[in-house]
Length: 180
Image (tube, rainbow, N blue to C red):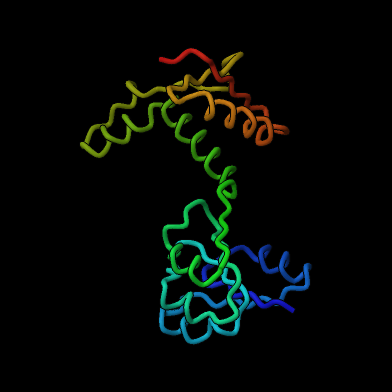
Protein backbone atom coordinates (compact mmCIF):
# COMPACT_ATOMS: atom_id res chain seq x y z
CA UNK A 1 0.00 0.00 0.00
CA UNK A 2 1.42 3.44 -0.94
CA UNK A 3 2.20 5.77 1.95
CA UNK A 4 1.77 9.55 1.79
CA UNK A 5 2.96 12.27 4.16
CA UNK A 6 0.95 15.47 4.48
CA UNK A 7 3.38 17.99 5.98
CA UNK A 8 1.22 21.12 6.02
CA UNK A 9 -2.23 21.81 7.45
CA UNK A 10 -4.98 20.57 5.10
CA UNK A 11 -8.64 19.78 5.41
CA UNK A 12 -9.42 16.29 6.76
CA UNK A 13 -11.04 15.69 3.40
CA UNK A 14 -7.56 15.07 1.96
CA UNK A 15 -6.97 12.24 4.42
CA UNK A 16 -10.39 10.77 3.64
CA UNK A 17 -9.73 10.80 -0.11
CA UNK A 18 -6.40 9.01 0.32
CA UNK A 19 -7.84 6.43 2.72
CA UNK A 20 -10.82 5.77 0.43
CA UNK A 21 -8.32 4.96 -2.29
CA UNK A 22 -6.32 2.55 -0.13
CA UNK A 23 -3.44 4.94 0.41
CA UNK A 24 -1.96 5.13 3.88
CA UNK A 25 -1.62 8.73 5.01
CA UNK A 26 0.25 10.39 7.86
CA UNK A 27 -0.21 14.04 8.76
CA UNK A 28 2.74 15.66 10.50
CA UNK A 29 2.80 19.42 10.37
CA UNK A 30 5.41 21.84 11.72
CA UNK A 31 8.31 19.53 10.91
CA UNK A 32 11.73 21.14 10.75
CA UNK A 33 13.63 20.58 7.50
CA UNK A 34 15.90 18.09 9.30
CA UNK A 35 12.94 16.18 10.77
CA UNK A 36 11.33 15.99 7.33
CA UNK A 37 14.62 14.84 5.79
CA UNK A 38 14.89 12.08 8.41
CA UNK A 39 11.39 10.65 7.85
CA UNK A 40 10.78 11.25 4.12
CA UNK A 41 12.48 7.96 3.24
CA UNK A 42 9.40 6.12 4.59
CA UNK A 43 7.01 7.73 2.10
CA UNK A 44 6.02 7.29 -1.54
CA UNK A 45 4.46 10.73 -1.71
CA UNK A 46 4.55 14.13 -0.06
CA UNK A 47 1.70 16.66 0.04
CA UNK A 48 2.62 20.26 0.85
CA UNK A 49 1.06 23.68 0.85
CA UNK A 50 3.37 26.67 1.14
CA UNK A 51 4.96 26.18 4.57
CA UNK A 52 7.00 23.10 3.64
CA UNK A 53 9.99 23.71 1.42
CA UNK A 54 10.79 20.57 -0.58
CA UNK A 55 14.50 21.23 -1.08
CA UNK A 56 17.07 19.15 -2.95
CA UNK A 57 18.26 17.74 0.38
CA UNK A 58 14.76 16.58 1.33
CA UNK A 59 13.85 15.24 -2.11
CA UNK A 60 17.15 13.35 -2.42
CA UNK A 61 16.57 11.78 1.01
CA UNK A 62 13.20 10.43 -0.17
CA UNK A 63 14.46 7.10 -1.47
CA UNK A 64 10.90 5.83 -2.14
CA UNK A 65 9.51 9.26 -3.11
CA UNK A 66 7.57 9.14 -6.39
CA UNK A 67 5.35 12.20 -6.22
CA UNK A 68 5.04 15.59 -4.54
CA UNK A 69 1.61 17.21 -4.60
CA UNK A 70 1.22 20.93 -3.95
CA UNK A 71 -2.19 21.86 -2.55
CA UNK A 72 -2.30 25.23 -4.27
CA UNK A 73 -1.31 27.01 -7.45
CA UNK A 74 2.44 27.56 -7.24
CA UNK A 75 5.34 25.16 -6.96
CA UNK A 76 7.98 27.72 -5.98
CA UNK A 77 8.55 25.89 -2.68
CA UNK A 78 9.55 22.68 -4.50
CA UNK A 79 12.99 22.20 -6.05
CA UNK A 80 11.85 21.18 -9.54
CA UNK A 81 15.37 20.41 -10.78
CA UNK A 82 15.92 18.04 -7.87
CA UNK A 83 12.53 16.41 -8.43
CA UNK A 84 13.38 15.84 -12.10
CA UNK A 85 16.85 14.51 -11.22
CA UNK A 86 15.28 12.07 -8.73
CA UNK A 87 12.39 11.04 -11.05
CA UNK A 88 9.79 12.55 -8.73
CA UNK A 89 6.58 13.81 -10.30
CA UNK A 90 5.45 17.26 -9.12
CA UNK A 91 1.77 18.18 -9.34
CA UNK A 92 -0.23 21.15 -8.14
CA UNK A 93 -3.88 22.10 -7.85
CA UNK A 94 -4.19 25.51 -9.50
CA UNK A 95 -7.99 25.53 -9.48
CA UNK A 96 -8.30 24.41 -5.89
CA UNK A 97 -8.85 27.90 -4.52
CA UNK A 98 -11.21 29.12 -7.25
CA UNK A 99 -14.20 29.46 -4.90
CA UNK A 100 -12.19 31.33 -2.28
CA UNK A 101 -10.74 33.64 -4.93
CA UNK A 102 -14.14 34.34 -6.46
CA UNK A 103 -15.69 34.99 -3.05
CA UNK A 104 -12.79 37.29 -2.13
CA UNK A 105 -13.19 39.19 -5.42
CA UNK A 106 -16.92 39.58 -4.88
CA UNK A 107 -16.28 40.78 -1.33
CA UNK A 108 -13.83 43.39 -2.58
CA UNK A 109 -16.27 44.51 -5.26
CA UNK A 110 -19.04 44.83 -2.68
CA UNK A 111 -16.71 46.82 -0.41
CA UNK A 112 -16.15 49.24 -3.30
CA UNK A 113 -19.90 49.39 -3.92
CA UNK A 114 -20.38 50.41 -0.27
CA UNK A 115 -17.34 52.80 -0.27
CA UNK A 116 -15.75 50.86 2.58
CA UNK A 117 -12.10 51.62 1.63
CA UNK A 118 -12.73 55.39 1.63
CA UNK A 119 -14.75 55.23 4.85
CA UNK A 120 -12.03 53.16 6.51
CA UNK A 121 -9.37 55.62 5.43
CA UNK A 122 -11.35 58.55 6.81
CA UNK A 123 -12.00 56.77 10.10
CA UNK A 124 -8.29 56.00 10.48
CA UNK A 125 -7.62 59.70 9.93
CA UNK A 126 -9.87 60.47 12.91
CA UNK A 127 -12.85 61.55 10.80
CA UNK A 128 -16.40 60.37 11.24
CA UNK A 129 -18.01 61.19 7.89
CA UNK A 130 -21.20 59.25 8.44
CA UNK A 131 -23.33 61.23 5.96
CA UNK A 132 -20.67 61.10 3.24
CA UNK A 133 -20.71 57.29 3.30
CA UNK A 134 -24.39 56.61 3.51
CA UNK A 135 -23.85 53.96 0.83
CA UNK A 136 -26.15 51.99 -1.37
CA UNK A 137 -28.24 49.01 -0.41
CA UNK A 138 -28.47 46.17 -2.88
CA UNK A 139 -31.87 45.08 -1.61
CA UNK A 140 -33.37 48.40 -2.73
CA UNK A 141 -32.28 48.12 -6.35
CA UNK A 142 -33.88 46.11 -9.10
CA UNK A 143 -30.55 45.23 -10.68
CA UNK A 144 -27.28 45.40 -8.85
CA UNK A 145 -24.45 46.29 -11.20
CA UNK A 146 -20.77 45.94 -10.56
CA UNK A 147 -18.41 47.21 -13.23
CA UNK A 148 -15.23 45.28 -13.84
CA UNK A 149 -11.99 46.72 -15.12
CA UNK A 150 -10.51 43.23 -15.32
CA UNK A 151 -10.56 41.17 -18.48
CA UNK A 152 -13.00 38.70 -19.98
CA UNK A 153 -11.61 35.63 -18.16
CA UNK A 154 -12.27 37.09 -14.72
CA UNK A 155 -15.73 38.15 -15.85
CA UNK A 156 -16.55 34.61 -17.02
CA UNK A 157 -15.14 33.00 -13.86
CA UNK A 158 -17.07 35.39 -11.64
CA UNK A 159 -20.30 34.73 -13.56
CA UNK A 160 -19.84 30.98 -13.07
CA UNK A 161 -19.00 31.35 -9.38
CA UNK A 162 -21.87 33.81 -8.91
CA UNK A 163 -24.31 31.24 -10.33
CA UNK A 164 -23.07 28.60 -7.89
CA UNK A 165 -22.83 30.87 -4.85
CA UNK A 166 -26.19 32.62 -5.30
CA UNK A 167 -28.42 29.62 -6.15
CA UNK A 168 -30.40 29.96 -2.92
CA UNK A 169 -29.49 33.56 -2.20
CA UNK A 170 -31.55 36.59 -3.25
CA UNK A 171 -28.42 38.54 -4.12
CA UNK A 172 -27.87 38.63 -7.88
CA UNK A 173 -24.82 40.25 -9.41
CA UNK A 174 -24.79 41.39 -12.99
CA UNK A 175 -21.48 41.96 -14.71
CA UNK A 176 -21.25 44.43 -17.54
CA UNK A 177 -18.97 44.02 -20.51
CA UNK A 178 -18.28 47.74 -20.63
CA UNK A 179 -15.35 48.87 -18.57
CA UNK A 180 -15.05 52.08 -16.59
